[in-house]
Length: 226
Image (tube, rainbow, N blue to C red; front, side, top):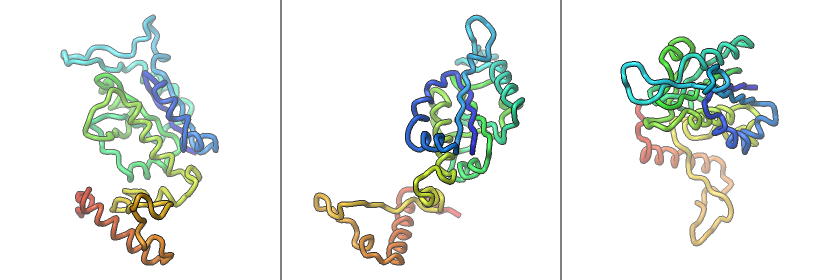
């Protein structure tokens, strides 16, 4: 089982997605556990303040040290984390290989930043890996955290109905997925390729490999660069 602990100022943003589909089934099977921690619960002033202005006059609010330090000190007193991730646009790009690596861990903490980000001292002291889901900025780290949790969870044996499915996804190999079809064989005049209905597994595999290569050349030639 993998346990995720997510630190957030708006954990309610994550509750609904975690209650459906693969995430729900994996949790019900005891394969994954996701604990959401509201940073407002780790403040001690009457206004439950989690942010403040940046030194130096930079625009935007910054998440303070105290709530995140206190939350992490509490959580690590129970058991150390294998990884403490921070979701940030200036982190390393999140890729399938990253998900594969994280799927081998047992306890992962994810800090979901908000506003302008978090105090640098948190990153220096606690964070073991900084992750970006792309070269763009969103309001907070909650949605990126969900993407990481979902990508990792589906790699846990038993999370998917077909255990082989995750191993044949795009980016598990150097190529994108080949096209896929289902019944009916003909719909509005559009036919499923004959080879996929032939029953010849060798020819089917050759077709899939060729289609995957051609799609990758067209859409993501960067993946083919040695």
